[in-house]
Image 1: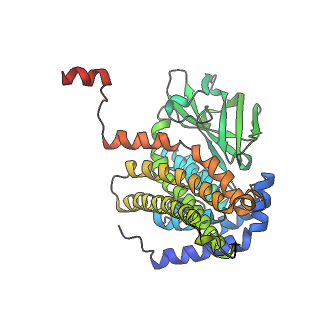
Image 2 (image 1 turned 90 degrees about the vertical axis):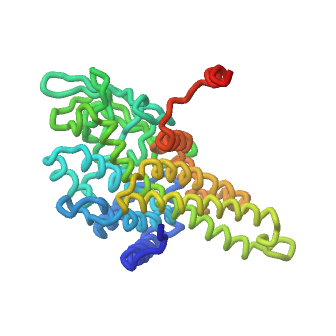
Image 3 (image 1 turned 45 degrees about the vertical axis):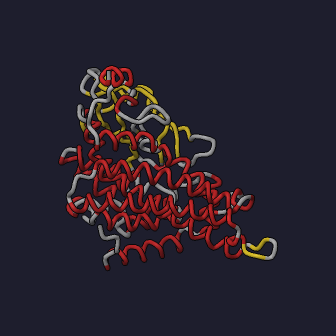
Length: 384
């Protein structure tokens, strides 16, 4: 695995870095996160004009048909912001869901609109706040005449406020999982932003929302379509988290050089050095796991286990990077005017987004060692 960037990727990296500095300066970014006004339409439109939405899609659907690593290079720089908005939720994940499961007509009508930033469909998958998996889909989809009725509540939908519509996972009358498109303006749909130490997340409720038959992306294989889309999408989210970890490490290391206590920089104190080392370990682990998954996808190798590993390590790494940086900054780092607080709130939010680290570690092990686990009592009996 070669981690060196190509000339094209270096260009992507520079353009994205310049974009972040120009469009998302720290003094504005911290204000957006403090007030939880994280969808900035003007920033989103500019990113769309640069071709950063739907980068993985074929050109016939308005995409750039880049490699996974090309796309990740851009998202790593966006993570350094951290640039808020549905760049991943709509521009990567929703686009991949429609591409994997949509009809030809849906692809032709939806995907170019996603790439141009005019359509922002946000995935609303599980009904349990921290739960993940097919068993966590409880919203019901029942047939009514020539259409359907959608009823339920998604308690953790990331970037819901930006949505022009939702891609909703729902359980049919025969117990299968369907994926349906729901317009934000539909009667019976409500969005309630979540409060607390979280950002860009909301509860979305569907109270007897009526849908036409053309709203259905897939009527029976929704979880399979979602899994296929996630395998291609999650490493891009991980790259965003890697960029965030790198930014935290950089400004934390700089602080240890410039903050003077007892006549010397705090970076000379052993305990501060320990925190920086721990932060660096989590950064490196997230980077190497993420880029292995990207390399496998670009090489056409089996990547599912590596993708689960990357998601687990990147989410845990971002969370822990914030914790160790807080130990270094102490009081100043808890000011909402400091970039660390924006990262900290986002890291807590992304920790459980699309599955907790524990879920992805277990999924990785199930793929690497596909055996039926024998209960402890059974193991003892066999040994006797």
